[in-house]
Length: 257
DNA sequence: GCGACAG
DNA sequence: ATCTTGTCGC
Image (cartoon, rainbow, N blue to C red; front, side, top):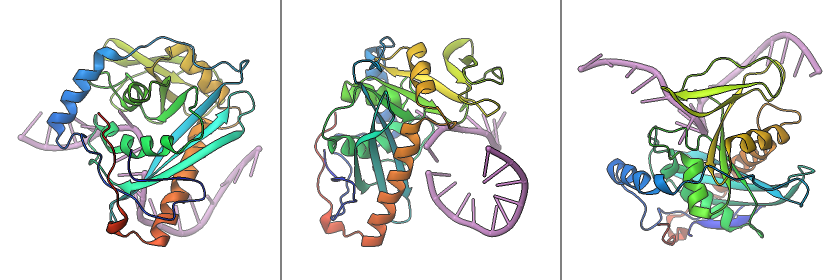
């Protein structure tokens, strides 16, 4: 991968660049989603609390004006939710934001951050959707296929989907529908708080994804993984901006396809 | 045709 | 995502 990878504290050098072999147009990106779509596996349990499993949260922060993106990957112990590893990566923004093509904007930086980890996590939780997507290939499914690591998504808003409001208690859930198709769950993670939207990414079933989500939300609406990754990528972006970015420091990223 | 639309 | 002030509550 490319970009500047670093464990926290933040990068001393600034990195960027779009990966070679990464879609440049919406048409190319959609074609890539169609190619990957049939490879998604919607089954699997993910790591168990018993065997010392780990879960990683990934998130990204942007500075559009400076064309910078900072990604973070934070690994937690599934049983204790303690942080056991973390890494960040800063680079140039590789793709514009287009609803339905979010993966092409976020994943290059996320892969760079994951590459900076000491050990591969047993599961990855994304901010956003997996198969709940117009072409059934949201970023969580895409990342799962690219890494081979079980992955699912937890989104904060319904996107284009519909649902009946779940009961008011933690654990209550209802179907997330794309027309008549069941693509995920509206899951209440805390009593009386807005639900989150869970969908399978790759290598983890929807029921297991919901179970993992509840395990990761002992005290907040959003998973601990997401919260940790969110704050870390913001700090990494601020640090990169503080240091200033020099295009000459941008190095080439490897092939991601 | 005009919005809406994960982050 | 990001821009943005104060405010209510645990």
